[in-house]
Length: 239
Image (tube, one colour):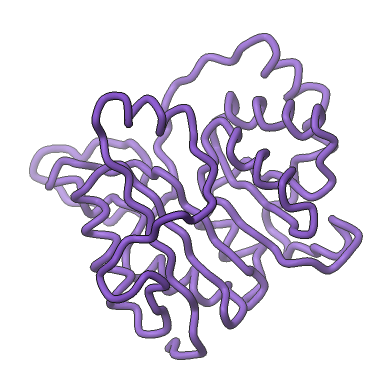
């Protein structure tokens, strides 16, 4: 995904890849309260320095990174269900950050922390190569109009950047409820030489253990499909 600036007619801009689209969103009273009370406790403010996970979590454990966690319900559920893993969530929209802060405090999650910043920059500046066991990107903006497809987050260069961050055997887990985006994801992921499809060539993953989101359940009631892709990093294979 990219920023939401509009190109002027007859001009072409080489915009940098962004992991988000700026959209207005109202904060509830509880979200505002969580942002004020828990930000310094659970949000990582340093977005320029390498992340020291041993210092942050007080241990060495498999590290899961989720890009664009939305309202954070499923990420909190995963962190609570897997106390032997550590989680970093990245999200720029403050209502979602506030909601997840409330979950972290309520559930007393010591294994989940947040960046409220662009994921592309966090990956480049803060996340060490070969440090992540899993990268999760669930329901990114599909940019469903053909002329906007180039703004999709899942592109070859970005997937190559993600792959560099994985430990050998680490996985990239994608999910979307847009079939055309699922097909695009499959094409991009299958072309990445250092990744293998855990479900088999051209197949979508089933029974991944990913928690179902409220957004996803609403889509299913409307007859929308959901496609998951899980690809494993098999070795160096990176230029």
